[in-house]
Length: 206
Image 1: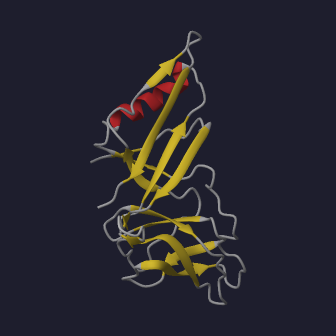
Image 2: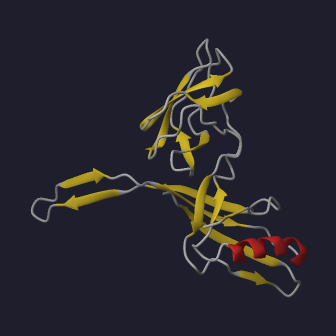
Image 3: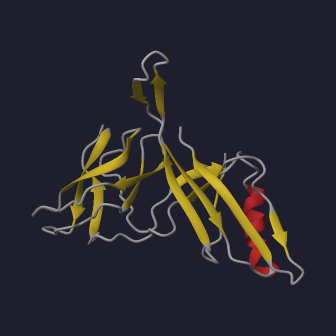
């Protein structure tokens, strides 16, 4: 598996980004009552469409899609409309303590005493214990205390605990993804020579 870097330009014309949760549901055929069980393994999924572009601009994208070899290789991407945080998001944030799991993350290294150091809807990225880039959505406003500590409520829950002092990325945070199938490396061109490219990916982790 190789991590392929996608071109930086042009930006996406349209995109969709979602969290695919993993649940089991049983509806009784007798009385219609429903039982739901939450399972681990929620994944991010993104679909991306680039603007029409001449061949010279499209060529690096064509090459990157070909190098992904369907679902064999990986790329990093996230929610392109939320690349910057709405919160203060200053300091040098780090994971504070090893063996953290669940839907909260204890952190430090933020600018001290900030209300709204991160806001609900901001994303963070960190490297988890398996070496994967993990992407999480902050789901409640968080403040930093006088020592720069903050506890973040996040989704999805942490799958594999990050190391103590793992760096937290707040600008253009991403996760590791693969193309959703082997038919994504497709492009079209019109009679003026402008290329149209779109593709979809889903988070992968080990």
